[in-house]
Image (cartoon, rainbow, N blue to C red):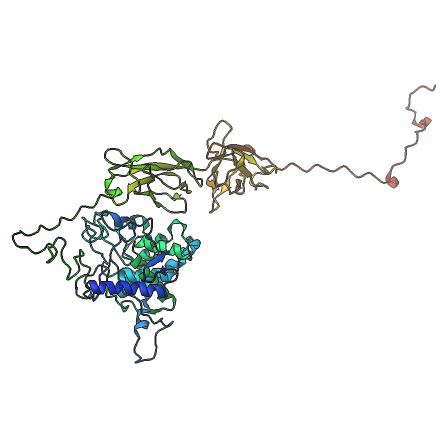
Length: 602
């Protein structure tokens, strides 16, 4: 874990005393942790199923690789909500311990706020992050961080080389921990690189995921604790979450003690002035204040090396006899994980799904020995790799599954996101450096196989005018509404020529310019789609608007541009009776005077 400040020499006796103190304090201060009469945990805090035990490769199952941690316990006296403010008044031990550096405290609270939105059912308290930050790094070495929350120097745990610690060979080429041979826990929340690779988060919005930044590390720790749909308001689930961080009941009790202490009151102190812990679970020899942890855990001072002859018990020579050879320590049998030689596919189907839908098949692998024999009780990690928003059930990008009696591990169901394309599901054996199996998964776009108009308004317009109605459609797929389907609308030249028309009706873009093709259209959740208003230039005639969707649905709509019809003249008003002309009288015969001259008299 982190650098250990002012550490004290601890022998076997002091270790026992510390352990007893942890149990006693946990029994009195940590809610939900039952202990028996000897202070041993009775229930509710069993080692986590997804956290590994220490030993070869075992630490990879926990966020920290089960690295050492600070064992200092909080004062028995509960803290006051705020420290003494009177000038010259000494600050009590309790008040000092309750102080959390300002930037570190802000990171914890910001992470809680983010998780409240992202995973409201988790009920993550920021005090839990503070408790873990306390035992992992002493609140980032007492708050030695810059204004952005990044530690002034790296906080590194011991190399996990199997010498007193878990054996985890290098997984990051030294990118995070500076060690290209073995992994080390890194940063204020002590993530090992292999865990940070999938659990890392950008908590301060700078576009990077840095385990040395307290905002990034706190948010990552929050998401890590909230995995598997945990509800941390349930004590058993909180215990499981803490144990998944570091698989030790002593660690659990220490974290719960600090959690309860911080819940009773904390206050902000300036960065760099936080109280530094003194004792570590990995301490066995003195080291100068501020020095990092020793790279390995030698035997407890005063103890005898394994195999050293003991006087009176075969260690001294009797008369006429030679020295007794030291007993050869027996080699422990290999763990199931150590017997795994490779992974085999266990009948995984083709991984394809439509955006927003569940994949119909799951990834399944089998762990086998070199001879091809299945191996049970081995942890297999499934990791989603690539530019995708697809997740496993529960919203996680990683899942750890223990193989069954047939050596098979089946990943949780995959849920496709909205991003289309191909990504990878990678299966690896936790605790072994073996080749993994990669599975390609493809997300296809949502589809529609039919489009219909939902309005019957006649789509007509005069030259240079605006169409009175808007085109309204509904997309369906196999008879059901097809929501969130991509569509394109194009004003084409003819039924046989899909070229974009350069005359007639048009849309307008945001700047008011003429547009005759609309892309990036998407149907609503109920499959409906309303196009923008249509306008007409001075060209008259019948025009075609063609709408197409992903999946092949097509609809062609006719648009008519014609001059306004001339007004029909109204009929003249019927004259009233007074204005009706009288019937003309029959004209009388012309008089003789009117007889044309020269005509004969009858």
